[in-house]
Length: 103
Image 1 (spheres, rainbow, N blue to C red):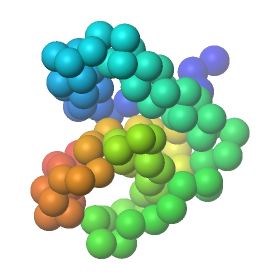
Image 2 (tube, rainbow, N blue to C red):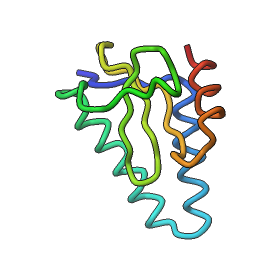
Image 3 (tube, one colour):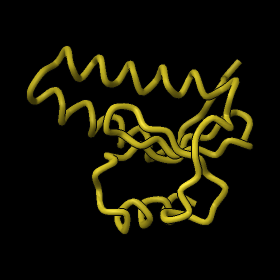
């Protein structure tokens, strides 16, 4: 049983995050990657756990923060649909544009 699925661009998000951290510390990159996936796994039984971000999108997406990474997902989709994984310190305008591009 598949509990969640990724927008195709999420694989690039995760790869970019891992590569960036790996530049400094391979073990840390693996830990952050594992924490992000564990957080997504934990959302499956409780998809309403995240919060809305009307400043980023009017879509019914929810968001959770893992370390400094913001995970955007569609809580009503089955399987849970992960739309984006972005650094939380990005400009809100940039984050909103990323989400618009992943309709």
